[in-house]
Length: 334
Image (tube, rainbow, N blue to C red; front, top):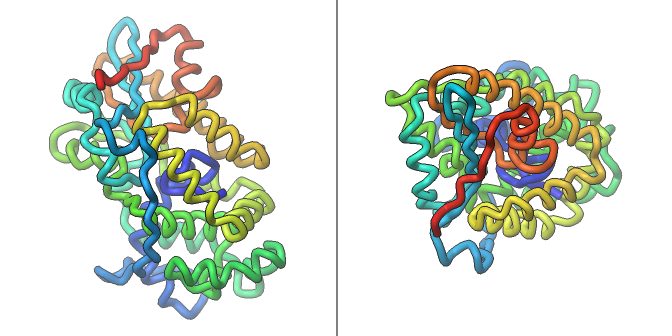
């Protein structure tokens, strides 16, 4: 089911980029011709999504968030690893004091991609290059009849036009819809954990990134269309599952329950092995190498990546431990 912006499933890998496109959807909707190069949208043009009230699970409202935080040490330095939800909500704050203190202690903030430095113009340009069909083709030639019949009403519910979406490839439609659904559920990109720390770091700490935007887009585009189309069909036929996934994901993050999040990741990727390979496993290898380069240096670093990349036997935490680094969970005192 859908979960972008911050689900912990295959769409979670799309959340980082979906946040940028959330800023540009208004202009995309207004275009009547094939996208080639699109300028940045004017202020206030993004459509207002439908409003759905997501009730917090019992763990979500009672206590301060615990979140996900690990401390990796080498002979020369310390690197903190914080698991992010790229879209967030007010009930995820305040963050654990241990997480804020680790950030303050660090001289470098390391994120997946510095989305705050990315313009909507570039986001739309990448969408046009990698996420659209040529004029003679369309989404309708690559999805099931069921998806085609249900998508127009589903898109309209979230402030989108199916004829516009039909110009996009399944992966682009999937995460555009997911971004809208996240915001409709009260989850906002500006309240994501990485954006929280990017805001604090601007002008105060050096900011570096483990990946480029092009690498993330390539990972999305390399997944076979059939898997993206399958995810899109699940989204339009069972929208209630998305709401339930969001409740589970956010409550588990607030509770600091890495096991629950790991189970959610496994379930969401169970039918899409290529998605897991491209969006999670291969990127975990790249992220591990990046984190290891900081462990070989001398600066204390605070690394924020999607929580799905840190957990599990193939996650960054386990990979660093297998390389001989000392990696310990930092548990909130709540």
